[in-house]
Length: 132
Image 1 (cartoon, rainbow, N blue to C red):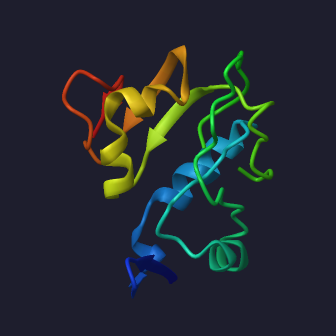
Image 2 (tube, one colour; image 1 turned 135 degrees about the horizontal axis):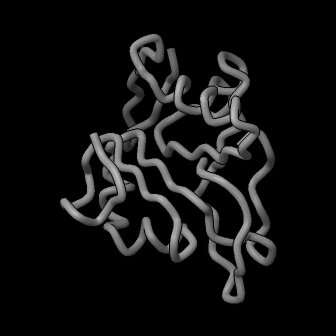
């Protein structure tokens, strides 16, 4: 179970019912670097329960960024000056913070020919490469 914060309220999400950890595990099975960001998750609890190292915020794109790795991280947050767009972005949760970014904001995290996969169908039809 992860404790998450919404405004000043504390809620609980039972991760045994989520497939997000399965997605991360599968991607890592292909030896990809996976960066994870979920604004509602308690980062320390995610580390303790699942060994996940979640980014506290979305990476800021460097003005002169020129590409790096995968979708979502067992590594520390990239520095703004060294971060480059992702090869893939997977929207695995439908939180309002991601909806507010809109298609342009999500695509700004990715390289021009990157794959955008929208598991929760929060983006308008036709703006992601795949969706459920």
